[in-house]
Image 1 (tube, rainbow, N blue to C red):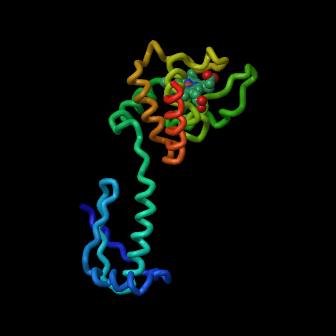
Image 2 (image 1 turned 90 degrees about the vertical axis):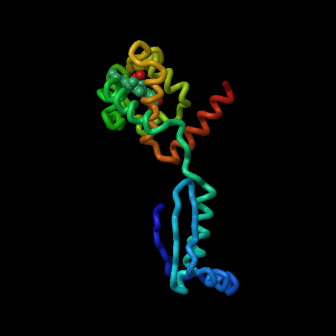
Image 3 (image 1 turned 180 degrees about the vertical axis):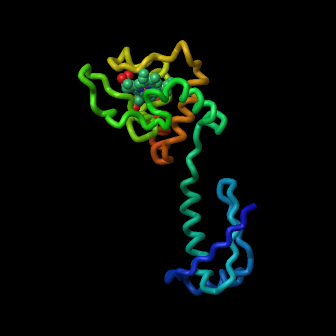
Amino acid sequence: MKNINRCFHGGVPSVTAMQRKKHLMKRNEVILWSLSGLTILVGCDDQRSAAGDLQRRTASVSILQSPPVERWYGAGQIVRGNKFYLENCAECHRPDASGAANWKEPDEQGNYPPPPLNGTAHTWHHPLSVLRRTVRIGGVPLGGSMPGFADKLNEQQIDDIFAWVQSHWSDEIYTIWHKRNLQSLKKG
Ligand code: HEC
């Protein structure tokens, strides 16, 4: 168990005398907050910290209202996915999935360079079913140049690759993608 002893000394004008009194009664107690498996112990000793403590409690409530986004994949998939990605995708999309710098500019033939997959381009606009299909059949049927991998990678390996790819996405990007993905599943 982690014991993080944090006392805030900012002072909160809105703290009422009642709250202060009530809080001071237990100022030597250890207040236990449990937040998604992470346990934080906070013990404050001096009087002024009581106000800050309340402020902190209010802050922790707002954190509780938006829990960390749960991903569909586990750590093992990310590790496996990284290996498959390096073997099959990195030569074009770069080892860190950052893609070609000029990915928005088509060449003389009208072909686009490999875009970033790391959440900075469009990849997160597409549900998982579309992303899987892109890898299976490639971009050629849609007028692009990416080869298909249906004969090289099975479904599990493709999913592992997307676990690794999505591990680069921020919670904000992932949450928007997740909603779109759910909508696409409902549509069938
Ligand atoms: C030979 C180069 C090349 C390789 C290898 C390659 N790609 Fe691509 N990829 C591209 C190009 C170029 C595009 C842009 C669309 C097109 O031209 O087909 C693209 C597009 C994509 C897209 C659509 C991105 C978006 O924002 O809509 C995804 C997803 C993708 N690739 C994933 C992969 C994965 C995963 C692998 C490895 C299994 C891979 N690519 C291997 C060149 C490549």
